[in-house]
Length: 291
Image (tube, rainbow, N blue to C red):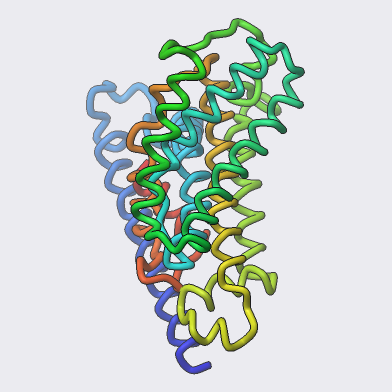
């Protein structure tokens, strides 16, 4: 119990420091771009302009959503290097379902989410049941899913001019709020409440912090890990849908390096590589710093 409180206190202090870094970074950029009016002749605000803030949040939304899922995997002392390829293959799958097979858009979304969940679930099974190292499993998945994305569309992006396809990635709600930001905030709230307010979420911390204690407490460690990989697969699928909508296409070339961005946002936000320490709030702050 004492160790748990120490971890919570250390996590809170780290998040406070990370938030301070974010605020300081914003202040520096504000001074350089707005107060000094560099390159803008003093005509208008640059950094604190609502449109600029909205653009920044819109740009980080895809990485942040992936990073939320990555947080769960790292919390249970795992890693997933395949998320960038999952973004590509799910975006391609959406284009194939909707454009080639003419499946209704909402049903295509559902099929893509199921695809992402299955992909993540398969990674989790390989890690827990076959006992392969997560690094090796997800590195192999990284290559397999990228290759599958190329095979599905013969190496060529599949474009569409359908306005409905573009809505979720480009439409503004109430004239100012991009749907992608709303999706990011919704997923943030879901994962935050899941980790902080549910027994299932607390098991992630225990499994990552002390696997032996979790086993003795009757927690099914393998099930928790499979759930983590499944959820990061779902997160990647959501990002794949948003990116495909923004680009009006499913491309096998997207998502390169996204796994590194997601891991960076997670670690900068205070999630420990050794597992058991971290938070979704910290990951959001980390994604904002990178953005």
